[in-house]
Length: 522
Image (cartoon, rainbow, N blue to C red; front, side, top):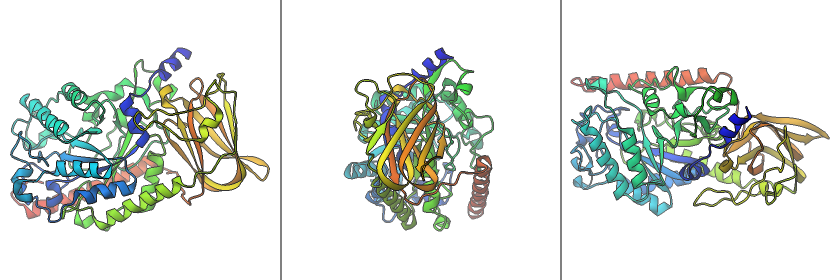
């Protein structure tokens, strides 16, 4: 077992992964022909002239993302219908064929320039599936796709993320399945954008396993290499416009991907963090009928604290409307989220003293009280680790006076991998030590939201199980901000209900579309 643990802790993040995980929250923009047809999936036959936003303002989009507290944005440069939001040389099915700016528009450039203006990172989504291009389902299509990647990565500035969707429904168009040359795509991205993470169908970030905002209670970064089997991810991604996203037996949807018991059946491991991708509306693209169905702040905070606060990345979709603007309701939600994040960070309580097992030289316990890292590399400027390996570790934080608190943030130094397997938090209340929280994984970010705020002047972290000894970058204790995250009783049932409701919505939209377009199949 000792040899196995040595192998687990030898797996650490690449520099690009470390940097992305430090920022942990990005915004998705789903935008294209579907915005104007009311579809979630286009069939590649829609006349591009329907794309004609009246007030498009990408500064407003990116400003909204920044106000929400996001690090970067990802634009659907091409969705499954094959329509490209930039004037590509690979197909006439692009922005040049639209009335927008008399065929001289370039939405990709506009978003990229807005990102530079507001200091937000720019990322691209480029669907491998293409329902319009005649070369799709042939080897020639891989050349076409690589040309599209090259255009996007060479002409629009620095790209922090390339998001590759695994959806594939070639059978819907009577075509043979396209054999994607994934390794060629990855090599091209590494060459043209070496600092960019490749997400979803890629080696840097994996899909959490659903599109409803449900994060695992215990999320591991060190997982078996089988989880990076691109073909498996593709096979278990959405293949039809029917809302059936979670597939039985898919590796990415297993509830446990990284415990010692689970890993014991495998020999090869990789660092592969999860991303929770979810929309603020029932659909990914804008639908006027959903203007009154934007998530509540309470719903969004549950997602935020269980994803960003649960060792996962968050990719939150804000779809621009037919005007080319983010709707007022969505903007209001983004601002509310951003205010909450900013105000909550200001509630950090000063820790007067720390008592912990004797530290390694230069790794003082006091290092845990300040969160500081290199913005370029993501490397911490300081951290704590004990001198000796023990069965468990007790670390006490004294505040100097009684304070009302409801959140504790713990960050591991992932340069030494992910190590903490089980921990508990105890508060001194009326002269007695009371357990107020218990968890398993920590990783690069764990926000422990207490079920009920407590008043105390002393908090103790006990690490009960650990892969060798811990390396802790930060422990922050925060004043009560009123947030309560109710633990779901039946998360599997909630996932099923989400997928069922989305399927019913899609069926309704398809029927409406077919009624209005009798010559088309929905």
